Length: 523
Image (cartoon, rainbow, N blue to C red; front, top):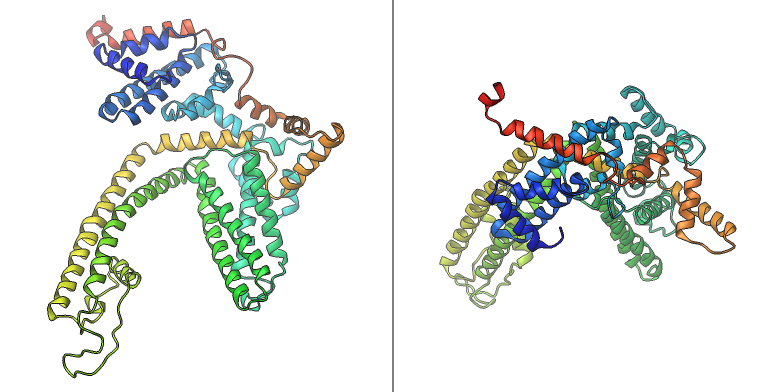
């Protein structure tokens, strides 16, 4: 599957006989579902390399994905236990089938009703409550922090191992993080920035502890690194830069006002981190069927905006430098055509011209704001206005409408498959929450320290990460912990989880039934 030449030749053979070569390879394998998923992923990756035949490769990948959906339907009904045993079975690498589906980006298979039913059972665990009760529990966690602390710590109850409770605990932790950002830079409770106090206040200390907890969580469980998940790393990066600015202010406090500038830079970096924190709320909203598709649409629209920004930057830079060159004075500075007196000429720089043209995109710049050209020929002002007009035509009419068309196409494309996109994002969220620790930041700092000390005492000073993980499992060995273990891969192999020979026979029978003409089926 990893050899691109084999995958490409398989696609070519499949096009010659109505994808029969793909079917034979899949149906004669020990685990047809696993083979179908891996083959679909291999064809998709080959399409990214072989641009000349990408359409044919993607068509073959879609055919394999449809085969995988049919095989999963038949296998779930043949076993009599639903899709759970199949999704928790492992392949030759030790990865579960659900992990292979997510890794292979098999969105059509993940959105299968049997898969979604299994994920819903995992999401709620033993907490079979109504929606209003779960919402009430979330607000209780938010308004009563002691209750949040009690449900987050690994006591003998099973609440902190249920994925939906884990999700609410991490969401409450994130809301408190945003509140600490606001108290630190928006409404500082201790003193304004102008006083230049370098000793951290209580809000700054709590913010640092919260961020350290987030860093420990990212190091212990990175999670999915796609889409909005990168915002967590950016937030931690800007926060680390803000901490360095605060330390730099401590070392430069004897050179006034250098430390004030460092504190000002720290607040700017924290403001960027706070903005990223608010954007990260979109990641938490992916579980909901109303807001999940919106988060996916916004994510892809931002990709279109980044591609558009590259093209706009090329035109913007070219016209900025052109106008800057036209505005350079031709005659000496002490020359005045009307009076002959010496005058001082203000030469516009590329930065000022760039700002002028940027706001012209939004209609906030008039042609009269172009710098005067008294020390240049009279035709220079006409040329400058012509260049300015061509810039507005190219950017406002051509490029802006191109951006609108790109975003409209992206919106319609995602809206058409919004249900599939949302179900795939929901599966990733449930998978990550099932594996992730239920202890949010900053409590994970203290629990990890406690586990390390426990291992140190048990192993006579020899700390091993695997042993520390085993000690944690001893405290979290409840129903939710078993769910997390099953989703990361059970002990049963996918080849033995179901009688694949009977599943293949049913698949071939269904295909023969579909291939028969309507009059033959009536007979």
